[in-house]
Amino acid sequence: MASEQLTEYERKRLQNIKRNDEVFASLKILSKASDLSAAGKRQKVETKSYKVSPQKKVKSETPVVIRRSLRTRGMPPDSKGLTDHFAHSDNKNSKSFSLEESSFPDVSGPISFKDAYADRSESGSDRSLMDAILSVAKQHHGGLIEEKADRVLDIEKKPRVAVCVKPECDENLSEKCDLGSLVKDFDGSKACKDEFSGKHDACSSDLMKGVVKTEKSEHGSHVDLGSLTLKPNNIARLMPGKILIVKFFPSNDMRMIMAGNKYGNVGFWNLNPMQEGEDGIYLYRTHTGPISGIVVQQSCLSKIFTSCYDGFIRLMDVEKEVFDLVHSSEYAIYSLSQNPNNLNTLYFSEGQGGLNIWDVRTKKSTTECRVHEARINTIDFNSQNLSIMASSSSDGTACLWDLRRMHTHKPEPLKILSHKKAVHAAYFSPSGKYLATTSYDDNVGILSGVNFEDTSMIHHNNQTGRWLSSFRAAWGWDDSYVFIGNMRRGVDVISPALRITIKTLQSPHMSAIPYRFHAHPYEVGMLAGATSGGQVYVWTSSQESAEEQ
Image 1: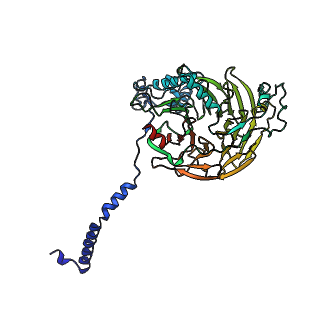
Image 2: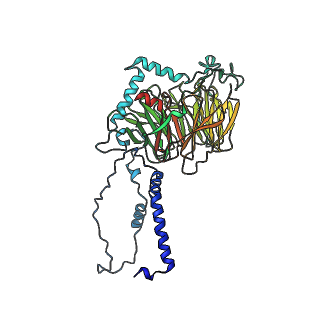
Image 3: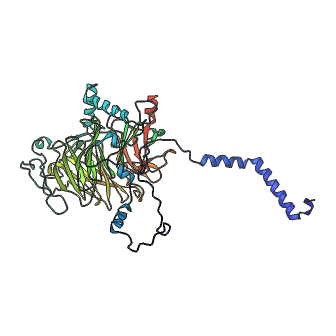
């Protein structure tokens, strides 16, 4: 009866719908569409993460007082108003209260591991981390394996590729060119005062002459880029917030990541924890600002220096279980490094272009001078001529310096590489033959030649925006490749010889943009990258993984 009341158009419409449903059912389009939609969704990878014990709220012991007006209490109104004492106390209470600042230990002195460790729960313990570091440090000193320690120390002083590099005039200047002490002597900046009495021009009348001499050597890459893979178990959220520095622990006996973020946290991730069931992640809060540098004392691996924008340099002494205060400055410290030729000194930048050379033993500065017009972002040393130092600055320049001349009143650079915008990094290659710079002008600069006289610019998009830290190109395990992040969640591989990007490392497990990198100094094919979300990705060689299995 209902069908008789339908019009001709409605009956035809129902027939068309029925026919279309039969066609879709025969082609199985709906089922294929649902399968395609499920395959297109990114699968969330469960990664390791740091643990922070929840802070208990402090219950107030002050009894709760119910406020009642004078009218409800049957009292006449008070025309005098509030007293000065009440108004003054109300202003004090109106300030915001930060639980993190109140719980942070005294920053002006040493901080114990117990106070700095983030996971203070009953099950949380950093004993495994301390045992692992002490064990490696003992082997490094020769306490367990004397022969192995000698081999490691020998590796540290030799280039990681077959390149012969000869420094000139080191023998004549080894006894004469001690750095003189310098004092602050002018308005708002740090001047250099010469107290050097020896002769230093005997072998280097020309600054650019005899910086580094190289001999030609044919060598290829030590790693196959196609074998680099990213596995889910090599991904971890090491700390909250933006990571500013990431490094491998310098040992071939332990695979461990060290990182620092913008909140003053220093984190460690042991990729091969000693005990089963542990994630190997340990987090400490040692500073009150962004971490700018992490340096492991090569003569004693159980001592780790950290620097921060808050002007503090701390020494993490694993044996004493304390973060000791080494140096405090009224200026921000933007970078930290150590010369492998002199393990008793720290090189760090403070303020706008200031360079400070600090003697750890005497706890005094031996050199203070202003070498740039803006903050110094990185400090690095040539592996074959440790008297040559490279610095990058936000003033748009990267400079090469002769440390034997840093004691003069106004030190002159050996070489200046100018960019149009800030230079965020300048690192020597493992052999010391090249220098790679990274600038915000969308260029990666390569300095080469006997005296770094050849300059080439490789275009690369370095615009990271406000939410990411700047890209910093890092060398791999030899002079063949430079690794730098891109805005497509990948890692671009640049060939200095070809002056182009030859490959991009990508993985479906990458959920963020990596911008800071470090290649393991002793394990070829192991590369670490850090992101603004606190994640660390470790790329490994598939050939190495197959050999381990």
